[in-house]
Amino acid sequence: MLDKVKWNELDQKFKSTVKSPADIPSAFKFIKIQQVLAVLAIVVFLIYPAYGYAIQEASPGSNDPPGPWMEACTWLRSNTPDPGMNYNAIYEAPKNGELFKYPDTAYGVMSWWDYGHYIETIGHRMPNANPFQAGVGGRRVSINETNQPGAATVFHGSIRKRATAVLKGIDPRPDKMGTRYIISDARMATDIFGAMPAWTLDNDGYYQSYWTGSGYQSIPSTRYFNSMEARLHIFDGNGLKQYRMVYETEAYQTDETVYKQVYNFIFGGNIPVEDTGYVKTFEYVKGAKITGTTSSNETVKINTTILTNQGRTFDYSQSTTADSQGRYEFTVPYSTDCPIAGQTQFDTAPSGPYVLSYGNTTKEVRVSEEAVLKGEEIKV
Image (cartoon, rainbow, N blue to C red):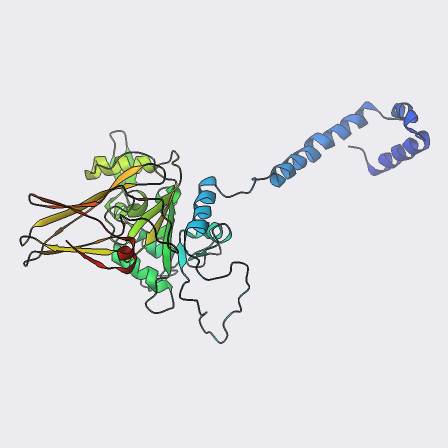
């Protein structure tokens, strides 16, 4: 490299020689080949990489969220009810430890904390958890602590009633749900699932060692497949009473198929081994109550086929046993009607009526969207 003195000498000679553009060729007689190479080295090893990086960073899309999340949050913004909170407003923080007074129309969107800013800035909806690690919930020091409500508590939980209780516990308003929509992606169900129970200090038993003939392999266990995250993303919410899929993005090749192969082979399942929507959006609803009577202790089943906005179909089903008086009841989250103005404009719904069956009896049941949202009873 040239030192400062030589650079100054070269600069003075150049200025004294070059009086006009025509003088430039003669000025190069003062420049040695080593000096040219030094300049080229500066350009190649210092300036060009920085320039390339700057161009990459400044290019449109260089820091964009993943495409499926862009799509899912854009859909959320356009197809879900207005929560009654001005996205561009600045709200004054409550004083003296008081709680912020949300309007009755306000609701949250639950996902893993990594994605909270996408939900807020693209979807214009309030995330229950965000990358500041607010709303994660769980425990911090000991398993004996109270498990605080939050994203970790919801997704790793194995009892759906408990998950619903957590969603209610998030909201300081009495008798209100802190969450209306839950968004999951394939990474939450596979690559980063372990982080969820880890935040609750209760992360044992979600994976187990399995002998493959050439060595032991860690595979998802029964506890994993009973988690809320698995029930939503791997099983599409099949059998859940108050959670329905309302949108999914395009499928990408992920480890989802591996998890499904494990479930079918090890646990005797029969779910289709395929990649499904990379990001899936579910809605919590009260659910319509379908009631009827049959013989005592009779097994009663109900099912329908769900058609997603991607043209994919999957089965939704439940089964129960009639009581000693022959009474049975189902709570179902999907309506067989069109969306209602001002509510979720869903793109995923049953392709036909529910089919109720017991013994030699089969009945078709149609369910209104109003009944799903208000928890109304439908007598069969």
